Structures are given as structure tokens and as C-alpha cells.
Image 1 (cartoon, rainbow, N blue to C red):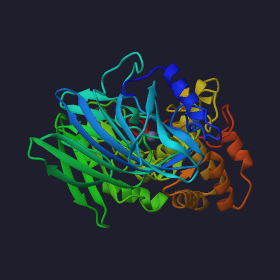
Image 2 (cartoon, rainbow, N blue to C red):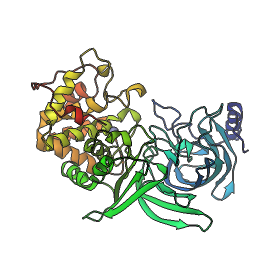
Image 3 (cartoon, helix red, strand yellow):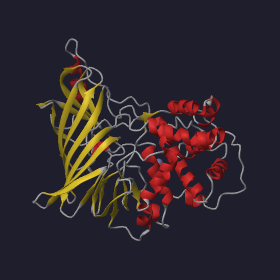
Image 4 (cartoon, rainbow, N blue to C red):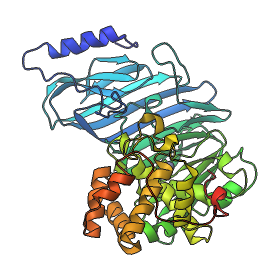
Length: 476
Ligand SMILES: [Zn+2]
């Protein structure tokens, strides 16, 4: 089977898989997220992805072999990945196996019925133009640019460049090797192991992410970039990349302050969670994304001059979102609310409006009948998962907590959350429980009002006017 198959054929394959007596059956078609039932797959946990890719910008052809090492968590006869490009071959533990594709779903045989706790190594081969759309997969998130391509998007990007368990609940380590024409840069997450000329007019860039990483925070940027490398005083690797199509110096002036801004955030949240840091700026994306260790910034974030707020926001996500990751998409405020609050802390530290003032102004900015109050912060629905309902209201919830418990308990709560959850996952209920533990008292009323309930709460502060810096703080 090599072609994209129809749903009927997938169904037939599934039925065939469950026919034998005592068969384990195919793994679940999704990770189990109510917002995106088909995102990811069930019954397994990925430990490591090894991507060996080659991309030709002139033709937009991506040729890849992705190795996925996983452990089953239930008995199953096939594994469900997310992948939109047509697959050419599939092997498991060294043997060819059957596979089928439908929409973004890739079903690969496990080589028979295997019990829970089985280690499986899948090797999946493909070669396609990721920009192509067709009836089976009518959209693409792969972005061809004048000088290369970008794979930078949330909540889903991986199906257009590698097969994966595309859900933040299953993090893994990564090797990403990408071969491009000589003179073209290929940037990804984590440590740059090296660049290796192949002698045929192409060079391979090798990247390693040794800390667990979500699929949506995994990225690839191919094109003409100025790459800068340095080391911080405490030994962390810094790598920044700036598209040569950028004009002006505002982006560099802002993103080159990354080590300083990381130190600022360490003072509030505890140690930076990763060995690498940096950033990437391109005019070919429209919004910033907290890609792990190396956030991606759109050129337009710096169109009015230097902007450290967007950098602080994406860096705060390295603690909240990338180190302590959400278990379900409904908990996205545990990243966005915290990253927005980090902007308020940066404003406070710079005398450009305290967090309390910004909270008060934000609270008054949205009238009680505004739709931003229609959902709970901890359950924004997919429609509002990237809006003010999680960003500003999430930050408001943190300010309400800070006002209630005081600065010492508040910041100890954030540091404990980041420390205990490092490399893992958190939930809204878990954060509320931790806040109660650190405070030593019940906070059900506060969390019920600000996090788990809809509607506009009363905020017990009042300042006279919009802080002068407000517009700047919210420019991103
Ligand atoms: Zn964010």
C-alpha cells in the first residue's frame, strides 16, 4: 500500500486487524482531547523522534525518513499517527508492515498483536511537496517562502513534515537532520550539533533536542538567515537567526537581549529549564510562537521599533508551556496566561505600569457583556483558545491570586509549579491544588471565580487611568 487510501479502505484494514480471536485491536485514533478528538493517537507514548529530511526549495520537495521510538501503553495491533503527506514505506522493528492513510490519519501495523509495555521502532519513508493540497488533505500549514520554507504553526504543524503523536500530552526528545542546498540555512530547536557538507552541493544541518518537546513547539525554518552563536555566563548555548530579508535593527536589538530577559524571568520563575536559548525572526510569519528554546518572531512585531515584551512573552513560555506543558488543550491558559503575566511583570520592573495597574485596566477594558467573559479560562473552547479569554483573563487570574496571597507566597507558587512540573505536564486543577498547598489555605472561591467559572468577576482595585505604557505592553 503506497497510495492515500479512502476511509472505506481504512475501515476494512481496521476490521481485518480486529478479526482474529483475542486480537488487541487498533490503537485509538486520537490522544483523547475533547477539543481535537483525532489529534494524536492513543495507546502509546513516544520517547524519541529521529527525522532525516532533505528539502529542495526550488521544487518544494521534502524527502524524509522519520524514526519513531515508542512504548505501547495498551495492547494494540496498529498505531495511529497524524501525517498528511503520502507515505511510501513503513517498517516496525525492522520488518515491512502495512499502512493506510485518511485525512491526517496514518495507521501503521504494529507487526501483530503486541501487549502493553512493548517497545516499537517505526521507520516511515516519504517524499512529497508539503505545499500540495488535494481532496484528502485540502489545507497545508507548510509555508513556502521566497528563499525556503517554514514549518512554524500551532496548534498543529507536524503532519506536514513528520509523522507524530501530535498532541502536547505526549512529549519526546528529537534528532532533526535536514539537508539543503549549500548556502541555505536550516534552523530548528535545541543544540546545533554541526553542519556537514555532503560534497554534492548540499549541506546537512544536525539539531538535537534532549529535553522533552511538544510537537507544536518543534519547528523548521529554511532560507537565508544570519546565524549568531554565543554562550551565556552560566554555560548555556545561545543561537539566534535573523532572516536576511529583515530591514532595520529593531528585531536584533530586541532578540539579542534574550540572555538578559531570561535572567530577569529566572528571578521570578526559577532556573531557565533548558540548555539552549535563542530566537528566530522572519518576515514570512504573522504571529510569534514559543518554539522550544528558540521562539519564532514575525518581523512585524518589531515594525515600530525594539519590542522586548514579545520576547519576554515567548521566553516565559519556555517555563510555562514548554517545560511544564498542558495535558489538554483546554489548559492552554497555563501557558498563555502566565506568559501574558510575565509581560506585566516586565512592565512593572521597568516602571511602565505595575501588574496591578495593567490588571485593573484590562478588567475595565472588557465590559461585562463582552464575549471574552462567556467561557471559563480553564475551558475556553477551541474558538477562544488563542484569544483574550486565556491571555488577558489568565493573567488577571494570576493577579487575583497574587493580591489574595501576597507576593512571597505568589512567586513561591510559580517557582514550585515550574520546578515540580519541569519536563512534564500540568492541569488547571493541579495548579489550583498547588496554590492552596503553598498558601496553606483553601482557595476554591478564588479559582472558581477567576479560572473555572465564566462571567466577569469583581476586581478589588481601582487606578485612575490607562497606564501610559499600556499600548506598548500589548504590542505583539
Ligand atoms: Zn503565548
